[in-house]
Length: 99
Image 1 (cartoon, rainbow, N blue to C red):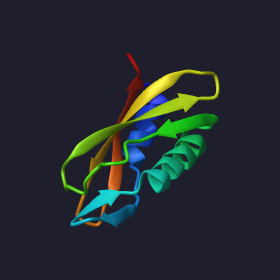
Image 2: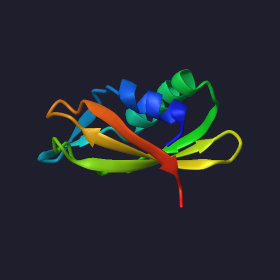
Image 3: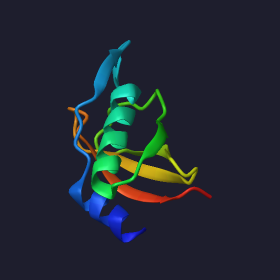
């Protein structure tokens, strides 16, 4: 992980983004994508073209999942996120090149 990515990961991504879906609760991917994009652009001082997160992530404290980040130069990375609690506070725990 690059130095700026480590710095961002250390800051953590805090977000309360969830919606009721049937009998369960899922993370709101649109809010999450917008927050990841804004936080990465601010912390890394780069332009993000797109963030793509799954739409079916259940709020399960301790669970991790990934989102794909596309930078303006076309570089793609995978952001690993962890659900911290039942309120869907989420932290970024990693950002690495996509294989």
